Every structure is written in structure tokens, then in C-alpha cells.
Length: 311
Ligand code: GLV
View 1 (cartoon, rainbow, N blue to C red):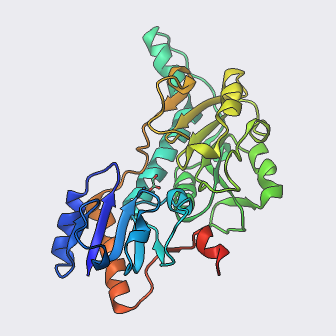
View 2: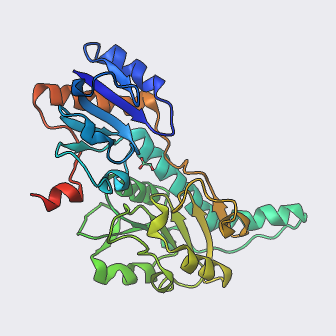
View 3: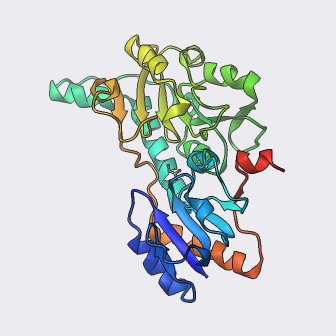
């Protein structure tokens, strides 16, 4: 039995090398070169073409090469086998650092100082005390919790909102649709860590983002389509939202014609807040294949809506 490997848009060879070392009894076939589809037992994939997974009659699990599940959740023909997310501890760490970096940048007005320096202008600005500067993480899954804890560790007033209740030490939390606007009203910075699904698509539209206090900031590190771009662009243009650090977009790469590229108060980064390092990310994947081989449950299992609907 074999592994199907397709890290769409990224390199396959480093993964194939790790599997050859760690799971020597299991040949690896890099998609689309699959001599015998019946041999495929595990699909280790990222953004795999929809419809293809049905071709493997003996498939026993799908192991994603990323944390987000929106692509697999939209697979119209998903085989009924366990779907396992990739939780690489290094990715959570990088994403938390990215959020902390921009929270510090916005709080201390570093862009203003950069511009002042170009004019040789010596002028310090008063800012809110760090402990009172409210940074709210939307989406307190495994990554969101790490981000919120890092924000707290960075000396800010860390807060969070999640669909269901969450308790995190040192982090004030709200939950449920009814409390979202209250959370936004009490935020100086919002960090979006929400997954993209039917209930979060365009959740952060003009009306909801207007609940932010004037001058607040936005950091987006999960999925672009959680934000309604037209609404955010209006608020950035009229100054209600002072600035945004955006790492992910509804369409990637961000098209040349997107206004975001040219807005002075927007910092565009190319979906790099949490890149996957094969060195650390391969460990949980190999571990999960070993677990599956022993008949144990891999971690963390994701329940796609296609499976939820049919149970
Ligand atoms: C990247 O966006 C991921 O979901 O892992």
C-alpha cells in the first residue's frame, strides 16, 4: 500500500524524502503519477483537485498538508474516510509572532516614526498604555489560542471571541453571534483567525467592522474571504479603520488590480504568516500515519460538513 502525495503549489520532494526515511515500507506516488490507484492507502494532500480522491478505492485517510480546511470542505465528492488537519507547532508560533509584530507596529505608531525620520522630524507621540491596548483574536481554535496567549505575553490586553465559549488564562473572551459586536466595540486591534466556512464568509463586513472604535486596526491571518473587501476598503479610506495588515486574500495571489496594493494604510504580505516547515510539519504527519497503521485515531481529526451531513 502506498501514499499519494500532492502539496499543490509547494514542493513535494522534501516530503517524499521524509516519508522514504520514516515510512520505508510505504512507497510514495507524487500526484498525478499514480501507476495503480488501488495501491493508495493515504492521501497526503493540499488543495488537491476536487473529484480526484474518488479514484482511490482503498483510501483510508486524508492527511492535509495545512491547517485550513476550506478547500477540502468544498470537495463535492469527498470519500468517507477520516480527514486529519496538519498542526505544525512552528506554524502556530510564526502566526502568533506575525500578529504580535503588527499589534506592536500599530500600537507604537512605527509607520509614523518611519515617515517622520524621512523628514528628520524628532517628535514622540503619546500612546495608550500597553496593558490597556485591547487586541482581540477572532476564532479561538488551536492557532487562535496561541495567538491570544502570545498577545497577552507581549504585554497587551488580550481578548478573544469564538463561536462557542472558550476559557483562556489571561484572556477576556466573548462568544456567540450575539456577542461579536460587543467584542468589536471593545477592540483597538482585531486579529482574524477564523476558519472560512458558510457562517464566516464575509462575516467581517462594513456593518460589523463599523462596530470597531474609530481608529482601530485589523490583522488578517486566516482566510481573506472572512472579510468583505468592499466594506473594509471603504472603512480604511474614510479612516474608521486606521490600518490593516493583510496576509490572506479572497483571491491569491492578490490580483495586480486590487486596491490593497496601493493603499498607504494597508500592509500586504503574501500568505507568509505561517509557512510550513517540512522539518517540523512532517513529524505529526508521520506520527499520524503510524497511528493509523496501528488502528489508532490520528490527531486532530476534522469533521467536514459533507461527513457531518451524512452521519
Ligand atoms: C495555510 O493557509 C493553512 O491553512 O495551513
